[in-house]
Amino acid sequence: MEGQPVGRRTWPAPLPYDDVLRDRVTGHLAGHRRRVASLGDRRHAAVALVLVDSVPGGARTEARDAGGRPVHDPALLGDRLDRADGGAAFLLCRRPPRLRRHGGQYALPGGRLDPGEDVVTAALRETEEEVGLRLGEEDVLGLLDDYETRSGFVMTPVVLWAGGAGELRPDPGEVQAVFRVGLHHLLREDSPRFTRIPQSERPLVELVLGDEVGHAPTAAVVLQLGWLGLQGRPDPVHHFEQPVFAWR
Image (tube, rainbow, N blue to C red; front, side):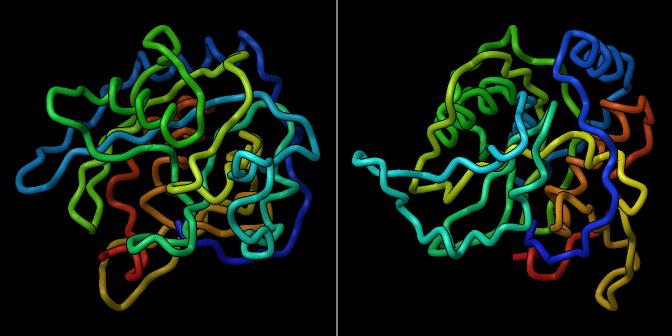
C-alpha cells in the first residue's frame, strides 16, 4: 500500500477498545462464509490485522537500535498517519525504503508460510518477528477472505486481538515504523474511493486512513475488516484492483 496525501476532513469518533468490540468482530467473522482461493502456482502468505488500543499522539513506534536511536531517517516517514490514532486501532507497518520489493510502502505484518505452517501460526510468527508482539491462538478472532495479489501470492488475513500484549518492538530489517491506525477511519464517509486504470477492467480501490490514501492489496484487506468486522457487511473485496506498481 503506497500512500498519497489527502486533505483532512471531519473524522468519526474513535471506537472504544473493549469486550463489546471484540465480541462484535468475532461474531461477524464467525458468521461469514469465507472465500478460499485456490493456490495454483501462487505462494501462500498470511497477514495479521492486529487490533490494539491507542491514545491520541502515540500513533507511531519507530524501529530503534540498542541505544534507543531511530535506525531509519524519521524525515522519510512523513506525518500523514501521525494523527490517525485514538481508541481501537490496527497496526500498519511502513517498510524501510531500501527493501528491494515494496520498499517504503505500507503493509500489514505478515509473510509467506514456512513449511508445515498454517495461516494462524504464520500470522502469529510474523507479528512477533516484525513488531515484537507475542500472541497466541487464543487471541485469534477469525479470518477474512483470501485475496490474490498481482505479485503471485494468495494472502489470508488473520484478525488478532492484542489486548495488553506489551510494547511494540519493530524489527529494523523489515519495518521502519509501526503505526496505530484508529478503526474509526474505516467508517469515514470519504472512504473507500474507486477509480479506473487503463491496464485493467477491475475497479481500483483507494482507502483513506488519516491523511493518507492507500491501495490494494493491503487496502482491500483492511477495507473488509471495516465492512465485515465492524459493520457485518459480507461484501467481497477480492475483485478490487491493485495499482500497477504493486503488480511486481
